[in-house]
Length: 392
Image (cartoon, rainbow, N blue to C red; front, side, top):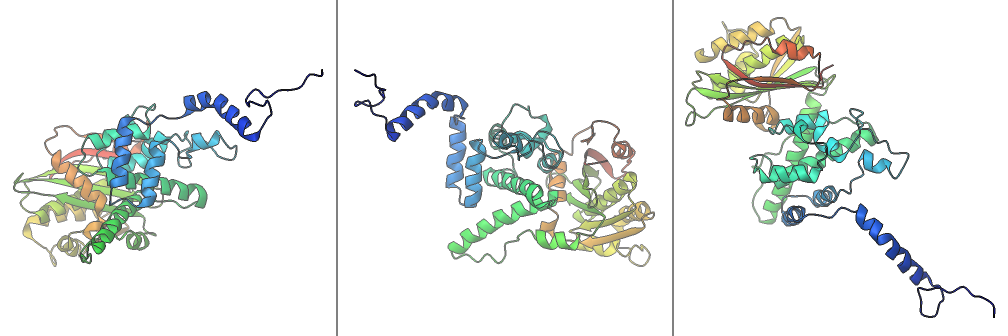
């Protein structure tokens, strides 16, 4: 009797496609389980909140599921499956892990810094899901679940736009796009409930971007003042961005002997001019959401347009610091177009009692801007923090 081949996975010893597939899956199952990410209870809890949220766009919810499941095609992960995908970050050239893409790249560090989050302190072994859990468990005033995931979504969008379309997003574009998405979802919800959404302020990112796209240096300033909490103190926020080379500087300071919000805004404008002078820039557009201040400052003449007597010393300082500029403009912007400086001012107000100041730079050494910023005197108060990013 001749020998015959028998298929051990079926009763009649005949090989079928179904039995072969089942045998292969049983063999591969242990290996697949060892490679897959088992989602934790805390991640499941976050996902449940994501699915229930009424303010998150459906695409953001799907994105949240992918980031928690570690299923995004970041550079490092995608390069394992295709030689056409580079593992390096398209912005800085470092290996693009999930953590680097969303938290530790210089571009994203600048975004999170606006919310008081120092992402460069995170251990490189962490995953974005670990960081998200930390953020949500800290009950951050400005980073709830909806804002966090919408912000991450726009960071992902900005990365893909640069990688595939060669289009650069600015830090402000990410912030404005996030606000616009959240406000749009809120307006849809109100419209569904027959509430008139006409009074809602949506961040006019596109208008702002077109208006200043050919500018050199943009210097935003704002102040936070609450006399019921601190009678003579205010928090100041200054955000400077060089459009030509993406050099950005974030400044937080505390003002003393303040008697009005107008005076606090004037001190902030004076501080922004002093920072511009210290950095040696020769052109600048100063932006403020305080129309009364802008009207006086743009006249650049204290004799013909002196303004409120209480802000004259600050205006004199502003004129002194900007006298060397070859181009100096002062413009008024909407309040919702001054998001970054406003955020910095609010945090500075909360930290106004800090005794020591910190001046940091993303560059490990040899930062000329950092050395220049150390020379700032600021007669109307004290610096709390200065963060320099993208200097050459």
